[in-house]
Every structure is written in structure tokens, then in C-alpha cells.
Length: 263
Image 1 (spheres, one colour):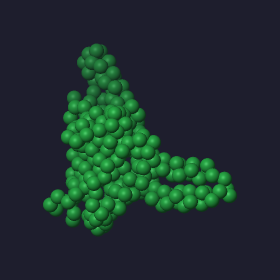
Image 2 (spheres, one colour):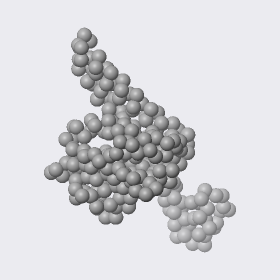
Image 3 (cartoon, helix red, strand yellow):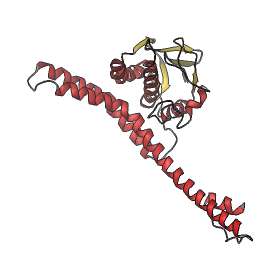
Image 4 (cartoon, helix red, strand yellow):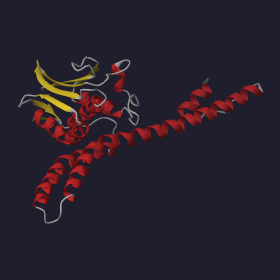
């Protein structure tokens, strides 16, 4: 037992001579299993970090690629080219800082989410996310219903919290495409000393315990990693907030609730 614990923890231990040949063979096999497990764990950590980066930057990059494509469709002398260049500039202004922030957060080697809270209008953060997600909702023909007040002054980090809204909306839109009436509803309202943000969809909902979706590699998507909701949970908790998953959507699908303290 001491030898196995030392192997797992990577500590040095004097060679133990076992009295039977069978036990020596078993010791060798156990060592090989532990070595393979350690290599797999290292690869999983690298894969998790890489997948997390790719997951988060995919959406803002898609918006830039789409806007760039609209520019290249027009001739150099076309009057529409200028307006489309302006649109591309607007998309870049919104999306590039998001990509840069994700990369910087990952490269600092800190597994915790670093946030810089300020008293900002949460509605503006949500609107920025809606602009980024507009291409996906348009392509999938998912109707997004909004129930948002104009002013929601909340202490939050706009760049980091936009990642939360992006993840929730992206998951909801993709889930809604599985239903006949593809609908997503995004609502926000004051509730006592906090703001509640709710995203509902018309998909099939969560199978099994909804709370398990916040674990890494827990996903129903064919190519998903399950990291989106895990990252969102960490960002919300870094804001001293809470996030909850359930199958209580008014559309019959999943419901995500985020509770964010005003102060």
C-alpha cells in the first residue's frame, strides 16, 4: 500500500522486495497502469485548456469571419462596400477584446477566473452578446424573445460576463434547433438585492440531473467538451453570484438562471 501511494504521489520509496513471484509481477503491472494513467491525466489537462480556449473564441471569431465575407462579396468600387467595412469594424471592436481577454486569462497560468468589477449597465453587456450571437440565431432561424429593462446597473466585469451570456445563448440556440418551434427567451429583472438573468429554450432539456452539466466533459453535444458551462459557473461565482440549471423552461426545454448581486 505504501509503495502504491508513493507511485501515485510521485514520491521516492525504497525498493520493496515482495516474497512471491506473483506479487512482483502484480507490482510491475500496477506500476505500468499508474504510468499510463498519469500520462492520460496530463494529456487531459492539456486538452481541457486547449478546448476551453477554442470553445470561447469560436463564437466571436465566427462573427468576424462572417462580416469579412460580406465585405469581400462587394466590388472595390461598390457603394455598399463602405457600409460593410464599417460593419466589420464594429464587429471587430466588440469581438477582438473578447478574444484577447480569453487568451490573456489562459496564459497567466491561473486556473481561477480574474475579474475587474465596475458599476456598469448589464443591459449593454447583454446587447453586445446578442450582437455576437445574431449570426448563429439567424442561420438556425431561432427566434430570440427579449424581456430586458433598459437600465440594470450592476457591479460586474463586462468582458468576462459576456462570456457567460455567450455560452448560455449559444447552448440555448443549438438546443432550440432540435424542436419544431425554435424559440429562446432571454429575460432579466431585479429581485431584491440581486439581478436575475434567465435563459430558456424549446429544446429537449437536460437528461439526468441538470446540475451535472457544470462538470467538465459532461455534454450532450457530439463535438462538445462541456467546458462552456463549467467556465460560466466559475465566472458567475467569481462575481459572488450563483448559476442554476433546470428543466423548468416555459417552452419545455432547459432553463438557466444566473443570480448576480447588485453590489
